[in-house]
Image (cartoon, rainbow, N blue to C red; front, side, top):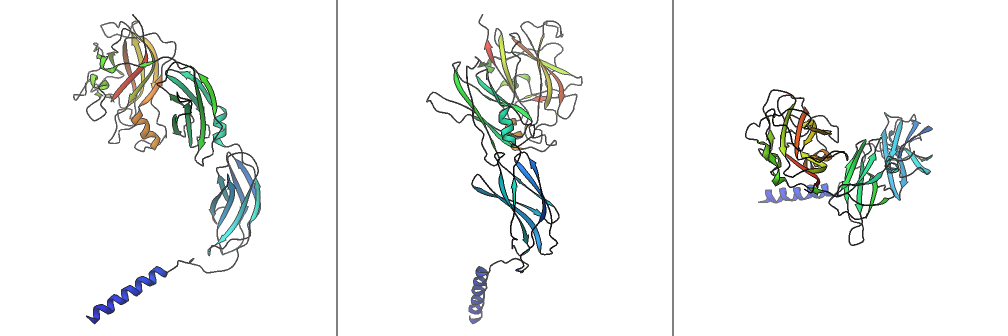
Length: 392
């Protein structure tokens, strides 16, 4: 019994000692390191790169730069194997003071070297300058150019019936250019606003426009009908054409071909007398690493007709509407997905028809390219169309 009591006392003593242990730097040296010298500053968009000569001091472990930005202390560090340090996230081009320190292996800092810096205009400000808001079908669209491919959040909002700004739509992106739309609004004058935020929470002013949305409605997919023509590509594996508008996104609820000719095309009836189309959205097959890969459609032409030739030919009964190409937002290699990529897969890729296309009743997809380059099969999960039905 005494044996166990002694063992218990030893364990308690050991645990108490562990609780009181305070981790200290591996090197205990009170030497104050020497300062960096020969400072040069390179101005960058929303950032500065500070170059220097390292001190001839064996105790130096790294270089630290600190600066107050928007009331917050921001720091950047560089190892002794570099001769520069970069601080990012400046909101404007005013003058800032950076403190540059040499830090020893005992975490002792040198006296600061004070460096005045003036960054170039931040990417979010450059993007804001070229923002444009314009009327679109069912709402408005904001277009942007982002030549620096900066990580940005672009928000398009509007004043709703309560008289206040709603949350709107936000796009998180680093694409060089793109658009963001707000839909499903009435065709009355509405005040829209767009602003930009970067990953350091720097926020632009708000661009405000009062616009009248163009009329559109989502075409009723329950009225879509298969319209097989002699030259159309047949379905395979039970993935029939009508499943492309059944509202299902799981395996087996899309369309799949099994042909050998290329390019391939299919035809279907929109279930209307004729409709002036405004936009189109389609969903890729997902899971199993198929997103932006395999036989998912990358590029295709969309054609329309009100009375197609029954022989399936590409004669004058068909009108070219547009060519669409799927774009992976991140640009990552096949098999790798960013959050933006995954969100686009869930939302579907949307494309706007040219404003001068004629009303159509039948649609023809002509598949030109798949993501893997395969030229014998393609698949697609769902489609939706918007526009205005012509009154008979």
